[in-house]
Image (cartoon, rainbow, N blue to C red; front, top):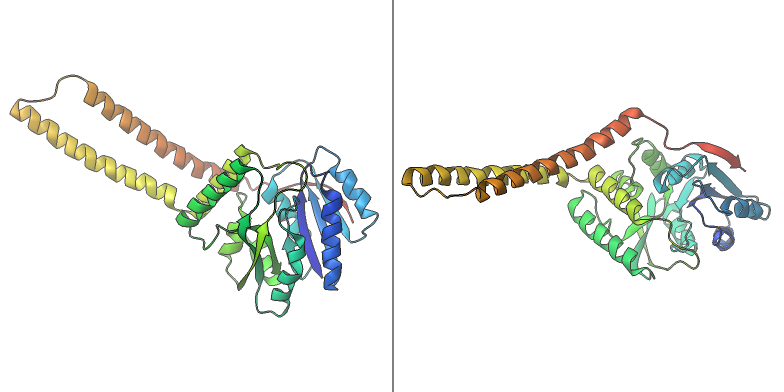
Length: 305
């Protein structure tokens, strides 16, 4: 069986096209399948539209969460409820074409690969600001993280049950699924495609949510923040050791500087460095605190299947 996990949030304008294209694509494969749509607390007519489509497609399963838990939690919910031997992840905005799923399935069916990912060779997005932000994030993240080639990949992928079991075995609350998928290893295939602009509606991922996701990815998969603290601390020690020697020598030689400007600059510099240290350490402490709470990632309000 093939399962396709699709998180949706306020996507009433796209539901009809989304379900029809996915169902048509899966029927062309000729295997048993299920389509799992996870409603992440939508406030529009998304659930109503899904229920209407369910009357036409009996292989459509709808999981309605009690509120908006976020993109990563919604995908995780779908993966945990998926029954298929092969499970695909597809965003509900249709920027990633579901027509590529059969090619992913072929890569996994012969057991040559365990995971097939969509590799974006180009992005045809209308929102220039979002496109720029995404490129900047992936550019820096791919260079500071311990993960390989994360710049051109997203959630769009398919994996076999063995890889999915490994992915779901990681229970952290702060999740960045493309990073976790890369972390588990396994044999990987890449399917190139051109990412398309949205055909309807607007992106539901706001600027603050993108920043939060970027921060989660950075602190979960990179040692750079801690190393920055170390390097800044060492630089501060060296700079002020030199400054201390200069002050002592200038006092002895009788040409000590007058005024308080140098003192104030030193105080402000040290204060800003300390605040930076506290902010970065606070990010780690907050994530440790979230993990220690051990709360569920999501709550299911209702399941229609």
